[in-house]
Length: 337
Ligand code: ATP
Image 1 (cartoon, rainbow, N blue to C red):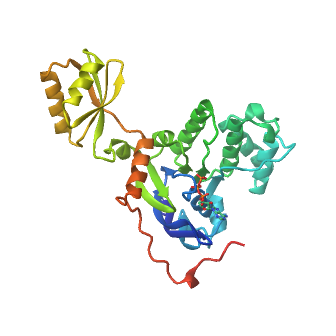
Image 2: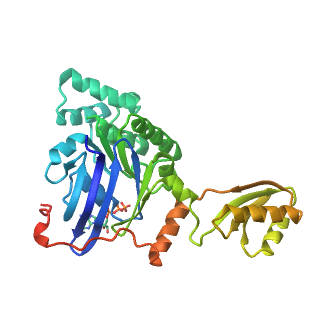
Image 3: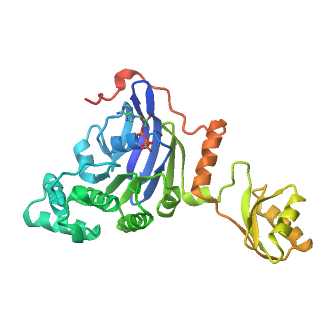
């Protein structure tokens, strides 16, 4: 087995002068869940469509389980399940007819086909909706249907473009638990989303793309534990005194900023990444008469980490992957017809 389920190396996709994907490289190991994050127009869908063999790269390599998406698209299509951000469904076709139609297209026959459609409907909880028209489903159930379609051929690699977009909180939780089950089954899942907090919970790694370039690839935990843009950390402090006493104390200490008042204390920012400085500040608070009942470092949420990262890029502090110089254009892959 190839060591990576997905490998992308120096991938470019230009639309005329627009550099939608501009020298992107990354690898996703088998059996892991990777979140793909970026602002609107960052290049997520374009990268995913290339991996799904639905578009050609201008240049570069994209592989699924060792198969190049340009030279071996049929092998790639047999290995992946693709869930696009929008997909058409047909009028007057019920849920079961819709899945049956795609199962036929995939080559399933007779009893095996009926069994597979039933399994997928059970997994996605679509059995009660089997006879409903597929184009009249709620957004959440439409996404279930899209996931069901992507799962029909029991893919090794699932590529999902914004599956949670437009879902209400309950439908998002349900989708998340389906994804968790698929991850436990050992599938490799590459999923794009704008809902960063949810991605953090289910992904082994997060891939950040900005302006067609990868700016970060790492695990969600290390991002949440990292400092803010100015090198500080937030702490939740609970006191038996009033919040005012805490904020007054902070005003007198230049390394500490009172950020927000809370029921029995507040949120403070310590201008240092070192725990020894936090311990020192705690000691001084106690010495100065603050009756501390709780003092702990807060995890940053991923939205904050992402916004910090974009700020660093704007200030030129974080360049992201440097695209290698574009080689001779005669090496380009064929253009899309
Ligand atoms: P979103 O989160 O809004 O879906 P995205 O990160 O998926 O954004 P892409 O859809 O990959 O972004 O688009 C990247 C850039 O490429 C955008 O500027 C988009 O307008 C452009 N683009 C995408 N497809 C085409 C196309 N077929 N022709 C011309 N430009 C395109």
